[in-house]
Length: 388
Image (cartoon, rainbow, N blue to C red; front, side, top):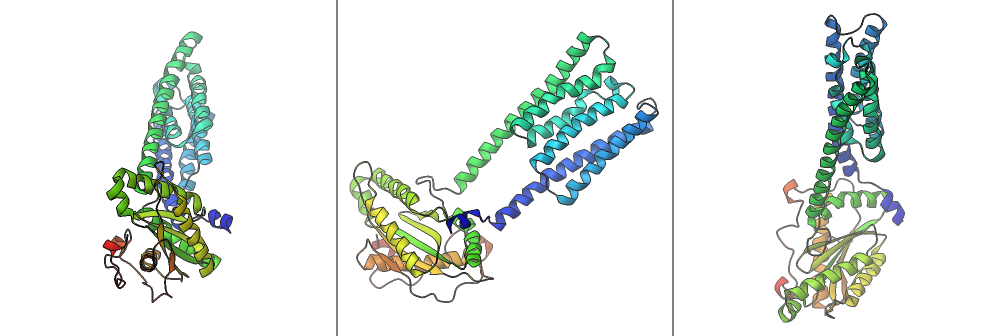
């Protein structure tokens, strides 16, 4: 079952990937149309394109550039192999164009390859980028051979032009890799709790549609486990906040090793954590909760500090048409109420929420990143301030 869960991708993520593909696809299409269109203008100028078969070859080549943009516009996506093919095609086309031009040095300089090498630098990786850069001198050599009878002069021109193109492309390639690393790091920070390294509320909400969709498909239930560390305030008061941070980090590592690969473990704030996962029934939810409780009780910091946890469990069977984010916080609220029952019952134990009441059907977009601001009814004799 775990392998099935891990193999299913979120439709929302797929939609986001499709949206990311549209921009490069349309950008490449625009470059092809502009390049082909501007090249066709040379046919209207006397003395630019050679007559006879070369003129027809040139015209067909420019028309092929424009037609190559059609699949990109229709599909609105481009993969790395397609981009690689376009880059290689661009280098070949430049050599063909240069052979069709009366004076390549004047009308078909190697700088025409700038669009090609920049495309390679921005979209290609690894051996594809290296190979495309290695072919730049070859294209320059073929294009400029007829303009420089002297071999030494030809070699100098090829080295200068191809070297400049490759250096520019390499610089753009390195800059792009740097930007990608920074964006990845920023994305990671936006979805991770800086103290524990666990997922935060934003990531929890983003994962909700995937879990709800998978639960409906597999006929499973979504379970929320709210974990609150017992007497955590005393750890901070007696041993200091550094010790409290160490306890949180130790518990987080232990729970991360305990949960299943398909579960989502997040920190809601303070000493409260939540696990969101799929279960077959109430019994499986209870067994998982006990495993989590036992894991917390055995976690020990480097200074020997240990804590226990009270865990509240709630589960639901997703239905079509409900808002996953709204139902997520409704489910967490129920688990949170059960957690307070565990506190009232003596702590270091698990409590399961009563059968669910009617669930919410929708939620405003601005409210999907956090739980409802109005808490449920408090249990007699227990308040959030004295529940730790």
